[in-house]
Every structure is written in C-alpha cells, then in structure tokens.
Amino acid sequence: MRVGVLTGGGDCPGLNAVIRGVVRKGIQEYAYEFVGYRDGWRGPLEGDTIPLDIAAVRGILPRGGTILGSSRTNPLKAEDGVRRIKENLAKHEVDALIAIGGEDTLGVATALSGEYGIPCVGVPKTIDNDLSATDYTFGFDTAVGIATEAIDRLHTTAESHMRVLVVEVMGRHAGWIALHSGLAGGANVILIPEQRFEVDQVCKWVTSRFRATYAPIVVVAEGAMPKDGDAVLKDGTLDSFGHVRLSGVGEWLAKEIEARTGKEARTTVLGHVQRGGTPSAFDRWLATRFGLHAIEAVRDGDFGKMVALQGTNIVRVPISDATSKLKTVDPKLYEEAGVFFG
Ligand code: F6P
Image (cartoon, rainbow, N blue to C red; front, side, top):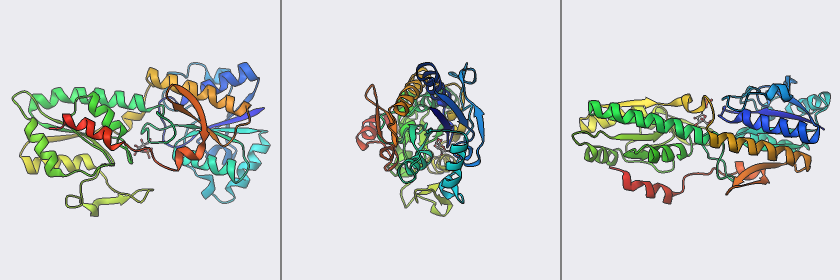
C-alpha cells in the first residue's frame, strides 16, 4: 500500500504531529510506503511530491507549520483537475490519500472520495475550532494559549496608562478563540461573530470597569460585527459564506470607544502569531492520535471518513459531517461568560 499525504488551507500548530503519527504507524506496523504531496491539493494536481519516510518525520513533533507546505488550491476549480489528480496518483502508484485540512480541503476530499472514487481519509484542522463533528481541532489549544498570554500582558500595560485595550483575535465565523482566551485571560468584554454587539453597551461595560488601578480589556473576534445601526457596512467585505465582514473591527471599535467614552483606547491585532510556533502538549497529543487513527482508517479501507474527537475517544465520521455546517459558539456558553462583562 502506498499512501499520499497532504496538508491544505491555513497552517496550524500540530500538522507535523499528524504527519509523524501517520508515517510512523504506517511504516512500523503496516509496512506502507508514503508520498508527501506539496502545498495541499496543488501537490497531487501538479504531481509535486517530496519523500516521506521515517527520516523525514524525525524531530518534527514540536515544530509548528507543516513540512509538506500548504496552499488553498482547489482542484475542483482547476481545468481538468480531477483527471489530472487521478493521473498523478496512478503515476505515483498511490492507493489512498490522507487529507489534513479545514472546510475547503475536506470539502474537496468529500467530493473526490464520493463522486470521483478517489479513496480519501480526512483529518480535521483549524485553530478556529469551528469544524463540526469533532469536539476540538488541534491548533485551537495553542492559539488560545497564545491569546491568553497576550491578554495577561495587556492587562498590565492597560493598567499603567489607564487605557482600554482592544485585543482582536482570529475567528472569522466562530468566536471560540475569543471566548476561551477571554475567559482564561479575565477580559471584561468578549465579542464574537455569533452575536452582533451594540457599541453603546460595550462602552457602558468599559466605563463601569474603570477604577483607580483597573483598566478594561475587550477581546473581539475578527468576524464580530456591530448591530446594523452601528455598522459601517460600506467598509465591510463579503466572505466566502456571504457574510458581511468589517475588516479591522478591533481598530474600528477602539476608535468608537474613545469617541464615545473619552477614554484612551489602543488595539492589538494578534493575527498570525496565533498560528505560528510550537504546538501545546494538548495539540501534540490530539494531532498524534488523529494521525494514528487516520492510517488505521486507510488500513480498514474506510474511505470518505474523517477522524474526530468525541469525548476522549477518536471516532470516524463522514467527512461531510464536519464541513456541511459550522460549529459555532452555543449561546448558553456565551451567556455564561457574560457575568464577567462590565
Ligand atoms: O485558520 C483560520 C484562520 O486563522 C482564520 O481565523 C483567519 O481569518 C484566516 O485563517 C486567515 O488565514 P490566511 O491569512 O492564511 O488567509
């Protein structure tokens, strides 16, 4: 058996741990061979490979990023994409593919294994934790840790200058990073894409929080949106889900807070720092287990499936279960956090 492995979409701490788990178990237990495809679906589309053996995965467990490279290439949108992939897999004598990625990468895997008969197993990945059918995706815990550390640091500088600090974290469609890091970091306001916010309410919370030695921290997910009356929708852009997004929501909100409360405000946009560097212990554990179970699914010929964490068990679900619907923040969880607002 020869197995192709690829990583697609935005990178994420833990990708290398998955690759290592897949390759180590595949070679040691099943005597499989591996082909690494470069840059997500671009690799099988263009026949771009790298060797993937025990030596290639040595020492990569704690390394961020992906040794295979990544891209957002979608072969279903390329001319003759499926035919070219089939030809390259045949040329490389690849019998099955393991696709590690988010909604786009896994969406392609669903189509290839369903409509086109290319055997694929999926591994879910995103720091945003917004894929359904799995309790957690690897990368999320690392991102939350980085954001929490940033919030801790911002508390002391905010207090020293008695300023409002607005921290913008990742999360286009779901506020998981904002909610978890906001709670862990003791933020005074948390704003998520799932619930539109009122700037006046945010200002009330901010004002009530100012004390002699205390200055508030506002955590805002990049996809959070003000209610219509407040929105500067002309500045918004439509994302792939057809949602209007206000780019630079953190910066915009800090300006509004300054104008409406008279308090000085600053913004920190954490951006790709949340995706870089070494994965946390939890993410290494989860990613490694995903890798071990993905190669087992290949051995069992269980294609069109994705490994997922449910409770403490790794299970297999149809890949489409993860991509057909986003996993957004439960309103009850958000309400629960509200006790700390203001
Ligand atoms: O990995 C998901 C994500 O981090 C989003 O939260 C973010 O908007 C996006 O990726 C940005 O990715 P890129 O800059 O690679 O397009």
